[in-house]
Image (cartoon, rainbow, N blue to C red; front, side, top):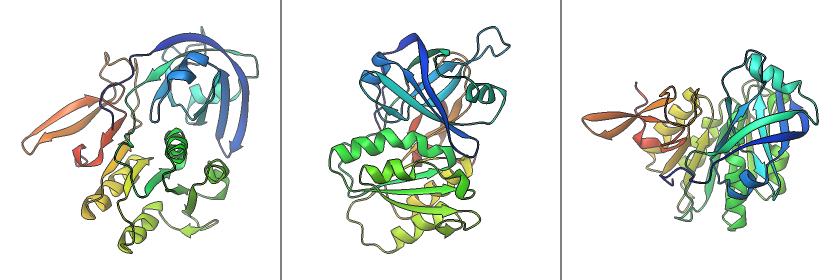
Length: 271
């Protein structure tokens, strides 16, 4: 991963261009944002003020899903009052957005292949990375998990750029019945991969399982954490993550600045 967070941060008023339901309780929002789009890197996020004067005082963090020269998108799940209100905001509604924030995934070692492991809306944090990998002609495999068919995300988007996708659903409605980590274990067990690197984002329990598996197989792994946060500027300390500095010392680092991307082996999962 790249340790430094972006120095190109923009706090801007923008406009919603579209806000469409793409799966059960999940929406894809597209908004204007040329400065953010031009500087965003895989793994980074934006901080969004959803509603002025409506009791929602804190911004919400959302991963940058895709970019082009003048627009950014974010793929989000309805999980509370803020995201419920966001899902109801129409085309043309104003948004106050700050970003890009946080550090980035590292692909400098040219993985062979890159394996993306996304659980639920966590796959949103891996889409910009998938685009970067394919732009560099790196073989990319996507392992996408969801509770059931109606909650699967990003399959078409990944396939369209040449990512080979494997699917797991809890109920078996599509693909493997079980956890996406089952597919990862099976893939690593076959021992036919040259120099794989794992990139993952999703629920905490899934990430801990990914880290355990890849540690056993000695496969380098980068994980994007999605802790709740208040300021997203490293001041409030509301998003800290326990990081193992050495065998005897743990340091709490901020997901919004030192992260959101960490090496899996550095995270103290037991805490």
